[in-house]
Image (cartoon, rainbow, N blue to C red):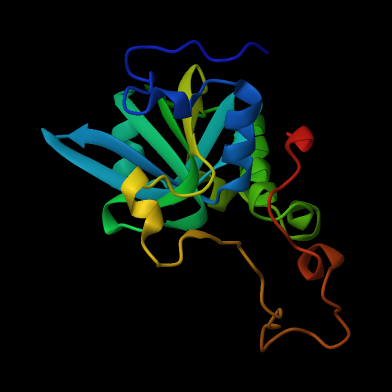
Length: 223
C-alpha cells in the first residue's frame, strides 16, 4: 500500500523535518498505542473525547455505547480529527526553555462511517479486543445479539494522515553547553505488574501465557 501524500491539513509545518508520511511508520504507532483522542465540532463547540480503538488494514475502528453522544454525532459523517501519541523519553536540557520529550504521534483526518454489516461489526470488535491483548478474543465469550445492538462501531478510513516524531538528545544554545548541569534523555517504557486474579475466579484456572508474557508493541504484521 502506498505511503500517505501530505495534504494541507497533514503537512507538518513546525519543524517539518520531524514529519513522517510512511504508512508503515504510522501503522506501527497506531498499533502500539492504546488510546486515541477524537476531535469534532458539535453545535458549534469543539469536543475532544479519549477512547480506545483498533486498526485493521486501512480502517481505524472505534466503538462504544449506541447512546454515546460522540458516536451518535460522528455517525452523521461530520469531519473528525483523531490523534494518537506515544511518549518515549523525557529530554532534559541545560536550559528550561529547551526541555522536551521524545515522542511519536499520528494525526488522522476524515469522516467516520457507521458499521452496519454484522460480520464487519463483529470483526471490528475482534480487532478492538486483539488490539488490547492478542489472543483474548479466542478465549472470551463473544458479544451476543443484545450486546451487539447496544454497541455502535464506527470506521475511519486511513486516507489522510501524518506522523510527527522526535528522537535524540537535547539541543541547547551553544553557550549553554558549558553550564555544569546534567542533561540527557530519560527513557520511558510501558511496564506490566503482577496479574491479579478476579476474586470470583474458579479454582484451577491458570493465568494465560498471553497475559504473563504481555508486552507492547503488538506485531504489525498480524494486522
